[in-house]
Picture 1: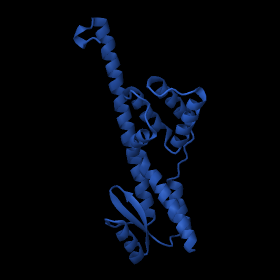
Picture 2: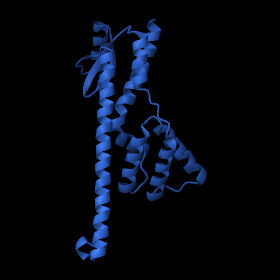
Picture 3: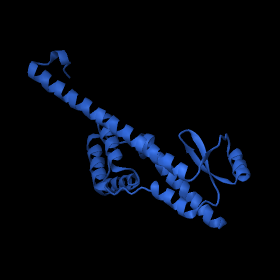
Picture 4: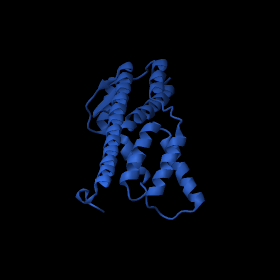
Length: 201
């Protein structure tokens, strides 16, 4: 591949233009990620506040159980590097409203599927039959349905530019984690607590 110094004037302009486009795209992706993280953090903070969540420093599972018993609270989870607890026998309407606030409602999976196909076309992978490939793409698409499509497309687009081999689900999940998983974790945690609340009446 030619170094930039070896390029002729017209080629240099084209090379510079491509570099500029890539730089602009990268900046837009970074801005999108930053905005999405801020949006998710704002929603999580609002939900924690609505449930009168309290910060409690714990180090072990045994300590968590002890604190739950002593303070009559449920352990909600760790968000923003802080362990949170919410009161037991919380207003069910308030709890449901909190769950609704972090319930995934994303449906634009055709765009996500297209991004998966594009990633498949530019990466190396084991040989699969057409039916096996379709089954695998459908599985990934289903798992990604809980994430915001725009975030997924950004991550898959980045992987298409940087990955040599088809990424594992764990790799994609890890890439999405910094700005998507907290809302999902909070959703699952609240649903778990809702089931516990129903049991104690």
